Length: 420
Image 1 (tube, rainbow, N blue to C red):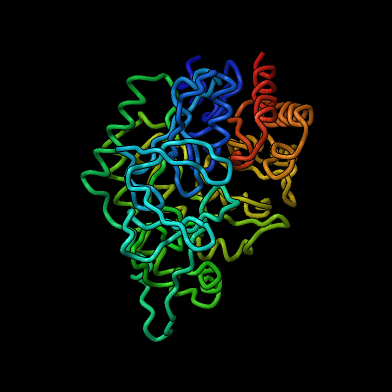
Image 2 (tube, one colour):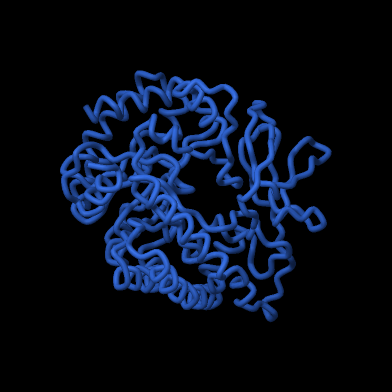
């Protein structure tokens, strides 16, 4: 099989010729840029190559075509035209990651300053005339959103302020998606994963609006979570407006790229913590499920795309509702969380869901274990999740930049041996 055929077989729960593997197709399945830099040197030996930062907020590195081929990866990703800081990736410039000195490339509009503590401050759309929207502490490999919440006056709250980022896809947006999809479809044999913008209801990474110069509405993380309980009508209206716009954009995208795309990312809303669900099943059914189902039903009606949800934590009690809402693919499959035993998940939901992730623990084993421990865990997870198909190997969330190179190599050695 070609990688594209392999992914399609997995998505349809048909037998594939070997394990399907993804790293880098999505903003939830990537590798930190410093780790990509070291991995690429170890695999390809090119010491002069500078890795591009393709997702600056999390500082994820590009898996270029040469590295994808060398690692035997099956999926490529198509992302929106602008990133979490509202900047495009059309031109590049050098950047040194402060914490370890790795030399990388960042988008031209990646503009920052350094504060009195030595921390980096990032600006929306690269505009240093407005307040910064994110901070990279000296000891960090990625950015944290800066709280920019103004005073909340209950009688003046307008739900449309939290809808400023939602709008019809522009001609430039559509042209970008068409160009990227056609490029990968025509020049590679990889499976194609596309991120649909603006249809993740309540994704907390989006709430602070790091791309907005002057965000309005409820933009503080804590205040937003409080609002899902105390201002339920407000949040519902935000979701209602977001859904209406999203449905129209899906129609436009479906007509533009057709079935050259195989799987689409629609939601990164986390519903779980380490110790169980973040919200009750009833809250999910009342507040989130109607809108997610409307989006998913539209996609299934218009296309053959399979629908990908990323939701961290112990979400076991919510999985039946996620299936009813129309999700086909579950990520990151956080096996260390309460209720998320891999055998239990595979036995109960393996015929209804494709599991995309769960391959190795990125909280403990991959960053802090020995190469032997990494190898063993990867082989065990593959044996469980890949049985009878319906599995794309990936780690549990992004591989962080400080993961030892020997542990990454042990992971890919386990993948290679499992494929044999």
